[in-house]
Image (tube, protein in one colour):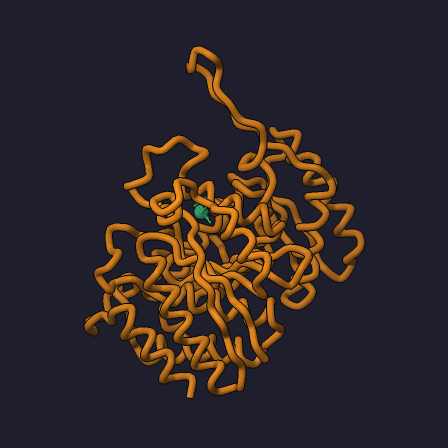
Length: 356
Ligand code: IPM
Ligand code: MN
C-alpha cells in the first residue's frame, strides 16, 4: 500500500527527530512492502520566518489532503516575544482544531530496563506503570474566550465544555479501556468548577454504556499526588485539555524521560496527527543529542491508528524495547549508566538494525 504522510518538522530538534522517524518508517516499508510518501509543510516558528504566520493555509490544505500527519515540535526563544496569535504554539493549536483532533492519546509506561531512571523509588512506586491518558484536545480553556481589559490590568481565559465535547472524548477513553485493564479514571475539579461538574455528570452517563469498565472520579490535585504515590493504579485517564497537558508531563517524567513518550491526536476520521509529547528543546537543537524515540514511537502509533498496521506498529515498539534492553542510551536516559550516550542518528540506526 501507498501512504501519503504530511511532515510538520517544525523547530529546534523537530527536523532531526522527524527525519529519524521517517528512516524507521522506510525500513518498515521495505520489510512489509509499503510505500510511505512524505510531503513537508511549514508550521510553527519556521512558518513565521518564511511566511509571517505560524499556520499557512497551504499547510492546513496539505494536511487535510494527506493520509496522516507526523509532527516534530514547535517553538523557541526566537519567537517568544511575539503576540499570542502569532506564536508558533498557535500553529499547533490551529492544526489540531482544523483537523478536528479532539482525542489526544498519551501512553506512559515504565520500561523494565529503565526503572533505575525513574525519579521514583523502585521499591515504593516505580513499578507496574502502564497508563494511557486521554486528553481532550480542542476545547476548554485553550480555546475559550480570552482577553484583557482596556487598561491592560486584568486578563481572563475561559474554561468551557459542552456535553457533546465531553461525551466524544469519554467514549474514546471507555473504548480504549475495554482493550486494556477496564478501568477509567476521570480527572476533574468538580469541587470548585461548574465545567468540571458537567464533565463528571456526562462521564457518568457515558460510563453507564460500558458496564464492564470500572469508572472512578478523581480531583486533579489528588491525581497529581497519586501519579507520584501510586502510578500503577491508573489504567485509562480521561481529562480536560489543560489538566491533561499538565498531568501528561508529570506522567512522562515518572517513566524516566519525556524523550520517550509518543502521542496520537485523532478525531472522527482515520487521519490523525502524531507527535512526541516533548517540545523543541532549542538548547540541544543541532547538537545530535536529541532522543528520537518519542517520535519513532509516535510513528508506530500512526501505523496502528491511521493505517491499521498493527504488526508493523509492534515491530517498531519491539525494536525500541530491544534496543533499550540491550543498554543503548541517549543522553537524557543515561541515569547512572556508564555507557557512552548515542547520538540521535546512532540511536535511530540501532532501532533500524533491530527491525530486521
Ligand atoms: C503539548 C504542548 C502544547 C500544549 C503547547 C506547545 C501548545 O505543551 O502538546 O503538550 O499545551 O498542548
Ligand atoms: Mn504540554
